[in-house]
Length: 365
Image 1: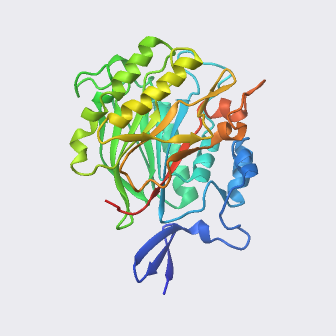
Image 2: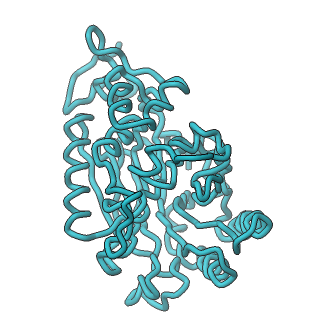
Image 3: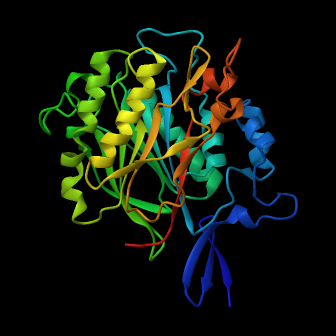
């Protein structure tokens, strides 16, 4: 026997085994088409323009059909949010972030947790996130929350996390200073203008449901030997950064922009990627670097590069696949070389593309 009740935009399904909450729009019929998994053609429209994205979402298209048995986590570097370029060096070719398009894309992707890099904490940035959260609340019938690391100048890049509070609870949010290789203690987590890790303990609101540690990361940019060494030094601190959490739960996920661009040539890029995989496999509790499909998450000078990574603890059985899905204009281009004018999403959203993974919403440890 299954009983459905509408509560705060969700259909609560009562069964003999407990309760499941599914977004109400998943059951819409009549003039509002039922939610369906988007075709590749619809996905391309989502990233063509804000207007096209709204059309797909209105027609029920989503990156995946809502499923109470699955949590979705992702990472996205949203370039210089919300200005689109450095506030002190504005670039007319990179206008401010299109907040309406960004919100529509999030509705389409349906992440329960989205780790974000390059957010500023200026008055404009805080206002922009408040607007996005309010819009997501209204459009999804859920309650969304945003947290950003507190250290660093407001005009600098920050790591933050956006989450659907109807689906997951985030607690013990804090900065992990050791993941900034320049930092020497908790008193200077943003030393050198770099970012610490942004940590949270995640618990599904469904019981029993998945629980794990999540860490947002944004390593130093730069195609130089010194920058590569700075990135390696940060990764070499994973052991120390997560050690105190492992007694509680060995399920750890680290997502973000690792800036694996090498020292300025393709050979060093490949070498850095290989080094990353070897290094994180040895860092306790041992991590897999999920290979993205397609295999790029960023474009520079017309070529796709793999800069954004998802590390999952080797024994984290809740991870449904050993690959991560890239969407955005990177997926539309298939990581092929882009000649001529860049897609509108590159200019109005970011030079990076979202990377999404799925997690079994069960407690398997």
